[in-house]
Length: 158
Ligand SMILES: [Zn+2]
Image (cartoon, rainbow, N blue to C red; front, side, top):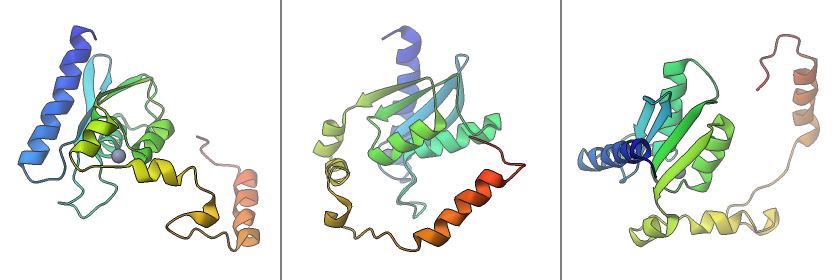
């Protein structure tokens, strides 16, 4: 770990601490860095905003993209106080930062009552055996949308 990496990780941890102490949500914080500057940040706000997706990484990605007016984070680094959960991992892959650093591990989080192991397990279970029923219906109509997308002349590809 370099000194600059240490500083940005400390910033993510301090955001997590502030969010926790301000009653925003769980103890999670995230900063996004471009050219050695913080261009986006977020802390967990699940309980205060009644938003189950308001994880620190998602908040920081939204904040950075708004700030930079981009829809992907090429050239950026993401520092998060804890290993990203599967949802945030998905968001990170969509945002495409260059590199990700995390502080605590998912096992540290589980020790504090934040256990996302069931999601990792569910992803390996066949669709028909998952705890929340997930059913494929209306495919024919839905697929027409993709045909319309393929034909759309003015689309912004991503
Ligand atoms: Zn998450």
